[in-house]
Length: 89
Image: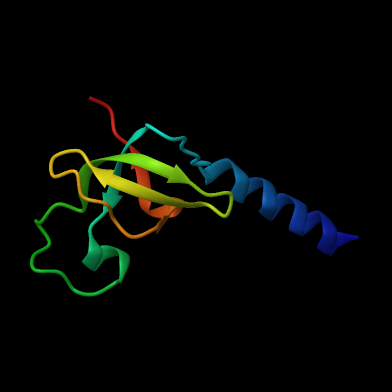
């Protein structure tokens, strides 16, 4: 009884802090820089942590997205939605 109440309160606290991110085709997003995503020490702590903007080309039901660079028009590898955030002009 006590453990189920504990698990319930922990789940509620976690759900309050998590921001669900779902994007649809055509949305503008920023993606995490490669060295941050791979958790490798980067060139400098003052370098930007996000790059973009990108346009969502395809959205998969598994939570992965295929992006197209707005500037170059190049297609990127599929990336998890956890590594994306909305871009506001």
